[in-house]
Image (cartoon, rainbow over all chains, first blue to last red):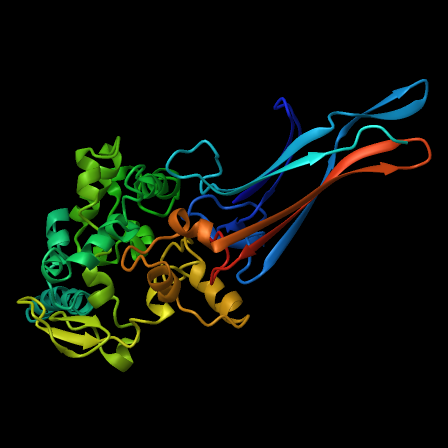
Amino acid sequence: MVLYVTAKTKEGNVFYQDQRIYMPIPQQFGIGDKMGRGPYEKSGILRDTSLPPMRTVTEKFYIPVYKESTKDGKMSRDIITNDFTVDVELWYMPYGKKDDEGNSQMWQKVTKTLSIEKGGK
Amino acid sequence: MKLLKPLVIVLLVLVPVALFGAQGDGMQKAKTIDELAKMYDSSTCKDCHADVHAEWEKSLHARSIFGPAEVGRTAATIKTTIENGLKDWPSSGVKKPQDVGVRHLMICAKCHLPQLIEAEDSVAQEIVKNLYDFKEPGDQAAHNLQKLNIGCLVCHQRNAIIHKWKFGSPDKGAVYGSKDGEHASPDFAKMKKSPYMKESILCGQCHGQGPNFDLEEPTQCATLYGSYNFAYRADGGTETCQDCHMKKSKLGHNMQSYRAMGQLAVDMKVDAIAYQWRDVVTTTPAAYVQIDLTNKAGHAIPDG
């Protein structure tokens, strides 16, 4: 399962993308540090990031809405856009691919429209 | 010496019969997919339980070695198990698909087709041939593979009794449910109460806990029952698999998992703000997004 966070300008230009993966990471044959792929080589768990039952998992994303540059030794942060959207999508992807018809599914999607004020000091 | 030789022959014949007879309940093993399908045929159940049967037909239980009707993903995974697992392992005894027998397929079939243990290697070979012949949903191989499934008799008879020393082995002439009584069926004239029918452990037999240590070559597929026991119940959860997957979902015997229930099981709350951070000389435009994901299910999501 993957949580995607994408920020886009009004024109649809993506300026931020991040994701979180939720899944038990099975151990290959119950030995060593490699993930097992396929039930035939999975035995045990190396690490588990799946969503635990009856619990809320909180994710926090900081989105820079600027491009940083340095001119004459002076740093400046120029705004990318004043108006943008943030898409949050939760996908079920049993085989690790979004483009996987019949297997992958989008479970939840929320879009937030945000603005940064113009002017002022 | 003259007497010893016939005695050895008799023992060689009788001992395996005694062992496998105990396992297979003295029944003859299936030699073909059709014979195995017939041994577990639930089509007569439809005569009286049409609604339940129609629900079940939509479930993955109805295509347990094929997988979702539109993609056949389970069949593909079993084939991968042969190609990337069995053929690759030096002590599996499998060099080519034609070497695959029942004991090899049981690493998947323990849950996807537990009744395969009541079949001869010829059935394993027929399954393997269809796995390799399968090209697209709807073809003959897909049809053949979907003859085998987790039908009525798997849960309502074969797997209806778990503790066989306490409750005895399942009665082949009975179907198991929530009460004792007569059952209007020529093949199964008795209805018996299974103490497990409404309990999560019934489902836990297959929707597992982790590595299947009872197998020669342990596999790990579902880990739901482990999560249910050691996280959900441990944390105070009280509902059963049947409560959510049959009753609350209103799906009855069309028991579904992630593909149909995921949206219901996970809540997503999103808060976002845009702001401008200012220090002495620099203004920094930014946004902050906080997402709360709440898993309302009785197990971790996903599992595996």
